[in-house]
Length: 67
Image 1 (cartoon, rainbow, N blue to C red):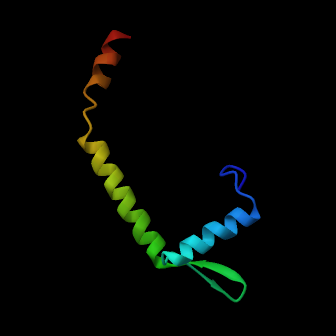
Image 2: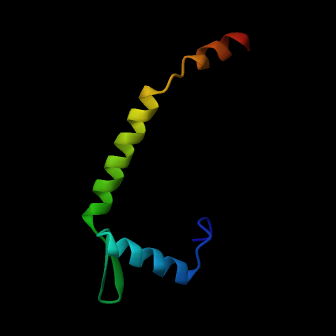
């Protein structure tokens, strides 16, 4: 939580937002992450890899030649 600069109330607020969007559920005093989290992350990773593949990184090879 320190890395994200979240205190306990901030984390609870974040989890309530996740619950509103169908990513989490509060049950028996504990937060549960729902399968939608994995589907979202898989989709996000796929999009990120497509963007990376589409980027022009040909300049990287040019830098190696000048070192």
